[in-house]
Image 1 (cartoon, rainbow, N blue to C red):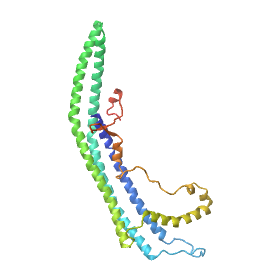
Image 2 (cartoon, one colour; image 1 turned 135 degrees about the vertical axis):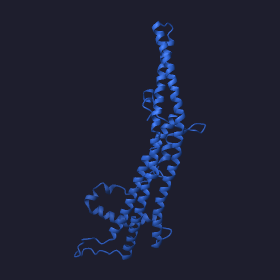
Image 3 (spheres, rainbow, N blue to C red; image 1 turned 60 degrees about the vertical axis):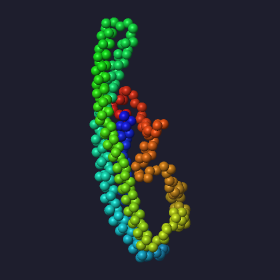
Image 4 (tube, rainbow, N blue to C red; image 1 turned 90 degrees about the vertical axis):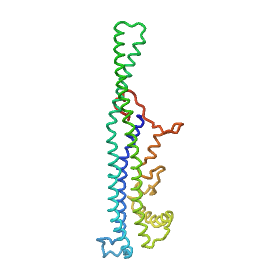
Length: 304
């Protein structure tokens, strides 16, 4: 039962994870918009350039490229506005329901703590009775102390039974209700993730079709190779020509970004997190591995 409570408390870390996922998507939307703005800035004429300088003859970006970039710029601005509304609904659809469910189980933590306190009291008096009965020769004082301990043990046992029955009656419905909410929260999160990705994919697909980009597109290997062929000579000239760059750390660092071995499709990493804490008995039933706790920590509620 305590394992269920521990898992339930851990599960509602989905609140913090959902907030982090929401903020990450807002960062993605901002980054995508700034990327398109950067393209437009690169293609635009350099404001304030010296027209009298004859050392370099600038090449004006073709008009059709400027129009195409401006079209993509406008589309991304409109898409970001729409998707920000979708991301903002994460609070309404996921965070707020999860917080309400978490708040509903807070009183049960007091019930669990009360039951633990009564159990400790019973075990304390039971130990006194056992120690008193072990004495082969007891004085009148010892007999009086034993009789008092037996009375207190009976009282503590009755209080413990009442608290235990109360917990067994009230906890399972709360746990069941809370767990029944999790699939809906996860489904909502997945649906939102698919919606955001689909909107971006649709915009780019329609833009590429209207601009007659090749279908299917070039492979990533070909695109990276084309970029390397154009970029690396310029990179080499800059790093060799400027001593402050040539001697710096950046020139010695690879520009490749290594992929992570493990990751999360949804961004919440729920499956990996749960699997690290759950193992199965031979019967196939899942068991949650709690941290060990002693009697001294039991009064403080569920072990952390």
